[in-house]
Amino acid sequence: INSESTASSFQRRKGKETSNAMSSGEASPRPVRWAILGTGSIANDMVQILKQLEGAEVLAVGSRSAEGADRFGSRWGIPRRYGTYEDAASDADVDVVYVATPSLRHPQDCKMAISNGKAVLCEKSMSPDATVAREVLDAASDAGVLFVHGVWSRFFPAMARLREIIDSGKIGTVRSARASFCQNDGAGSCSALLETGIYCAQFLQWVLGGSGGEGEPKVRGACRVVHESGNDEHVSAIIEFPGDRVGSFECSLAHCSGRSATVYGTGGVIDVSFPFWCPTSVTVTRMSGLGSQKWEEPEVHECPLPEDIAPLQTEDGETPGFNFVNSQGLSYEAREVNRCVREGLTESPLFNSRQCLEIMKLIEDIGRYGS
Picture 1 (cartoon, rainbow, N blue to C red):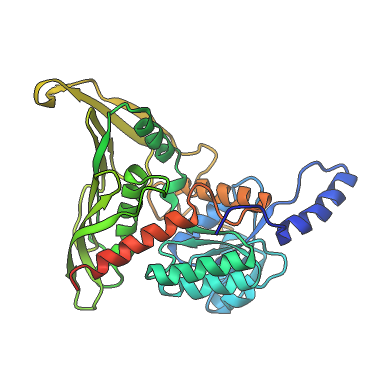
Picture 2: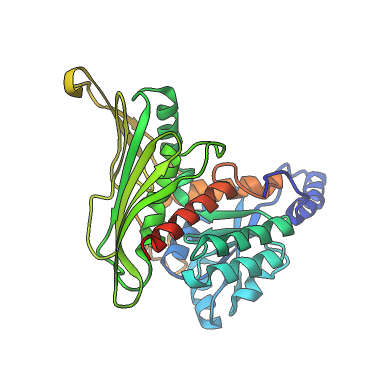
């Protein structure tokens, strides 16, 4: 899979429509048109983002029932409402399908949207394992359409700043990192690895991984507590990365943690406090001297959420707010999807298919460790 430009249906339509717009004195191209599949909590947050995003239009919503689609559409002022996911994804005027359906449906809904020639932004987790993830990515590659796995952490400015600090050598040579994402919510209903562990794995890959030519990370240890439902509810893992770097993480749906992450170097540390998976700041503390006991004053790098995004008022006058912490940051991945669609890219350079598959393989290997 590569990110070279393709002659997308959006570009073909855009060319004609831009020409018409220019002839009528309008200089701006038409917006990228989105369909939302699913009407749950994250869909309610994303629709508020997209309706405030320059260059985006929420054209359609698809649900498992006509009543559900009409209820969601009426609440948020969405003109086209479909009682099936298939009908929304096959709307000829839609450019991007946002898959926010129940997670077990993600692979089939992604493939269905791809088969209709749509760009796709899929909520995490895109699949239960690396094999199915590869099937989805291959389908997008074969169809020549954009696919983005919605691990939204990768698109936050604070994550880019974190990488810049590491590359600058400010904390020396990075040797290890850890992440913890435990919440007392949802045990047994789904896999902790796929629900919160994926954020831990992506963090470790971001700070410890290389460009892809140094070899793959390997799981060196894991411990799993399995709920009576059969889903893991608490997992700890140790991962060896190329260059003798080691990462560890803990995830759970059965108890709480501080939900922070830290990068450790030969000359100091970088702390990313709650919520580390959608951060707005990173703190650098340099250390030196005998026993690394000389600590410099912490250096805080702030990356505030976008000021132009706020909770919206519904069509009936309510302002329910966002369901999840820092949901304003969903705008970062949505803007990137818009950019990629307009440029005809089939994947985002900020979170490409290699990185996506590597994370899914780590999750799969941790789940199988010791079995």
